[in-house]
Image 1 (cartoon, rainbow, N blue to C red):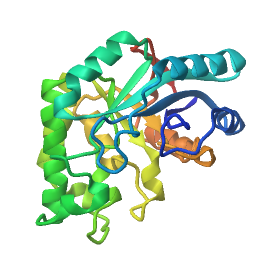
Image 2 (cartoon, rainbow, N blue to C red):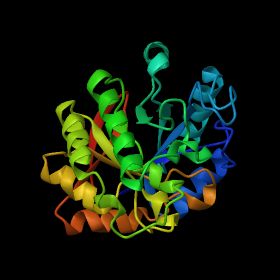
Image 3 (spheres, rainbow, N blue to C red):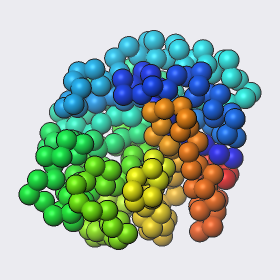
Image 4 (cartoon, helix red, strand yellow):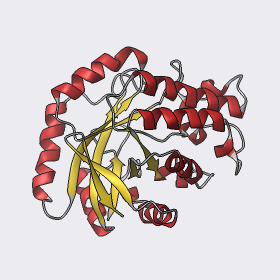
Length: 267
């Protein structure tokens, strides 16, 4: 069974993907289960304050219509992608208590108010330092906060880094990667395999398959697969290839979610 558990619709203002097109594309590409995971980042520096989804009544009502329309053809989870921000964790808790989300991705889009997309984050840092600071920041969040299901795109900094992309980039700061993975496993949380990384010059998922293998070797068993699509053309992108890789290393299951409860899905 194929899943795409990280999709942005037009409820995210950086997405052009209409729900009709998302659902149709998923079915055409053999995807059985999807999660709509639109953005809530309260202090995103590029497009404030519009980056945060606000009308949750409309969000839930609209997706519920599609759940009914595609019942028996496509399983649609109502999810969200929250941006890890120190001063808004209580706000997220209130939001997640107020609405019955199926699934929550927690992603680090900013480090000390700096968004890697803007470039300033990398100033004065070596490539390894850029990765290490990012991993350490996620680790500190994971150790202090647990109202999420999976951590999104673990090596996100590679998407915008100004340094040359090299084959061994995923091997940088491996001790920090190990601390992060162990913290995630200790909290009984998961990681996503974000296939949008295959569109990057590195041609590798986020995190790299080697980090996925390390997560599994350390005892991690909670994995989701998501395309991070912001355009319906990319729904299901590299999902089959990712599932094939997981089977090749002995991983036969991934997770989906309903009412924040994990459901094991055979690949």
